[in-house]
Image (tube, rainbow over all chains, first blue to last red):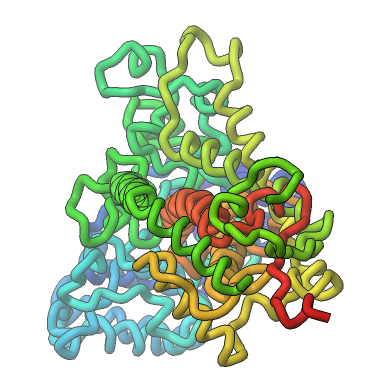
Length: 363
Length: 244
């Protein structure tokens, strides 16, 4: 406690050169660029490293798994080392009462200064009994811990939009964090979010003490500003109209666009096609699979994954708006045709009537 | 017998000394007709390209992406037609305030009891093929007016959702005005779903509209279909009026 990042690095035997390298890497990850390096150096030189609390609620821990696989090991190492990550169920040494004590101590001693990272949605049905830790409901823990937090980050789609727990019919009433607390929440959606994106957001918070520029859904603009589609390397195939028609056809082998296979890239905001995953190795579309739109709210209900259009509600799994529309269109045509037939059958009578009426008026 | 050729009236009006008189009425002014046909062409283009964007057909010729751009063209035509369609629609809204009484905005709201009676009459005439009680309106009949108003709402919905979808690929101020729609409909997937579903409203509208135009041309016998080309319709001159 009370050490700056530079001080704790010195204690571990890092040189000033290592420190500056780390600062440059951190500036890059945070999206600050070359001009931001000086800012990072001064922040890590002097600022006390903030205490961090990582809460886990209804989730699968894939966000944590993603986080510890960040591609910049020096950043990761140092951040995990120097962060006062005082409470995180999956990575911390203490357990039971000791663990809970470390949580309450952290928020007590660092009032208004600590950062809360939340992984997972919070169940609200039946007084929140579906997720309890140490005898307390997820919601009460969330409220207590975030009350005096300097910043709150929602990790992953669970915390940002409910993800699979909130999919219909949402039996536990899984609710995203931003709906439960009054504080602004930085949403970092994805299932899981990209490790480098998570790292970037945390670094930004550490360096500048302020959240990065956010969009209308409170997602960091630098990572969620563009669609997967916009930067996809298969985009030329889309514009050319070259589409994969089935998973094993020639188009799939040639790497054509997966649009018709239900790729959600055109409606998904994420940095996958830019940063890629696992140290820039690949991302779903590059590996031949369509984007399933995991950072988008309600993506589980926008299914099926391998269909371009959603199923039309109330008409079975396979019927899209096009099926329903075509049926309605054909029914309309049939109705109109039947009407025309009836009109023609009655034609003689109608014409005679009209003429008779005219005659009557004239006479 | 009249001397100017053989007509239906000669056959059915033995005393044919006094032919029925029709008065020419200039109903659809040029801007209204131009609006109608630009709208028709744009709408058909939008429906066809919109359907193709949702369900692209297999490329006829498939080699490398740099050799062709057909899906890009389909989307370009869709966006181009959409801009034409929206500004054309705005021009029509303006004309609803400055045009003649047949194109006035008042024709689209059944505020008068007579208009409501006409709606019932026209529904009966269209569905049950009964005869109308009174003379049918010279411009839009009251039912058509209400349905066109509903169609205007669908126009607006389709324009808003369309621009909302377009806003993600544009920095221009017009589409950017509609970014708020996206979170409202639960992300772009939802917007696309509703935008696509409403395509079918327009398909059904076109079928019914074209058929009813033909049908009313037949039952009213006053040049309904030709009026949207030339602007003129025919009103029967009542006997007392021409008695003088």
